[in-house]
Length: 369
Image 1 (tube, rainbow, N blue to C red):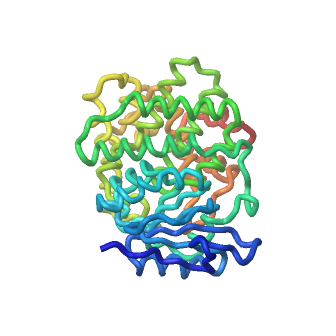
Image 2: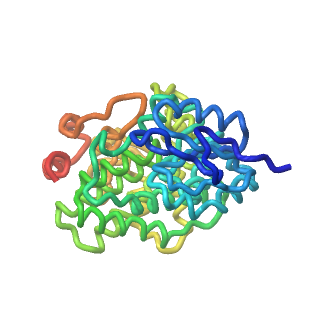
């Protein structure tokens, strides 16, 4: 049985939505049940003019919204089909936020494949959701306004995680191509633009992978590495956390301190990523080495193999610094974003663990590039 669309706000004679206040952005909300639809609309209606529909109804909304918010169970094939039918209208909205009932790697990958620009759990707080929908004029803006590359790269990373979860073949070439696009973006617009765009449009583990890739690329560019080494570096950065696909997102994105068992589980990811990747064509020994050893330190205190200085290669050393810095400057809704200068000072304080000359060279990447 098909239900008529649920609507919020005045309706005009043609069955569309009429905005009553021109100073309030127009949002479109989609959900797979009436309860979910009314719940999301209740959160947003104080700040926005809202039009809502259930996914099992025919789409009757013609006005292009500033953003679309979708709350639906993405393990349901009917919901996926209904969202795909609206693909043309979704693409016109600058922001497409998916609220997921089950924040698994597979569901996140599905959301990005359906056009999400940001994926959040359905339990997200009102404050966080409103902040995600805030107009860019209220905060830092990007120099290009183009979010297609971060979206494409996030889709590549999400698909990579899903391949591990489901035991499917990995699209090595597609992941490398996403890394190349990030490199082109940073060459054209710079690192700061990339960091701001990624932090505004992506969350958690996927945000981290995108940040590490951008930082590693800019670090490589600042060091003047050749094209082949830059390709190895951004490929290693894209793949470096693939082993985390076997770790629940509840642990990966946990707001508080990890307990001993959770920490031990997290520390399995470099070896797990290496084991998954080593059977794939197109992944060089240098990339495999970086994936397995990006948590090694020069003093032998890292994991999984407790390597010491002479056993740690150049690409690994660059990636490790980029990984730590990106983790420090990530945007998480439960803590303020650390300033880049403060993050760089932490790197400088890791005496004996990181190559001092590389940390010194990283200063311009951290502070001025």
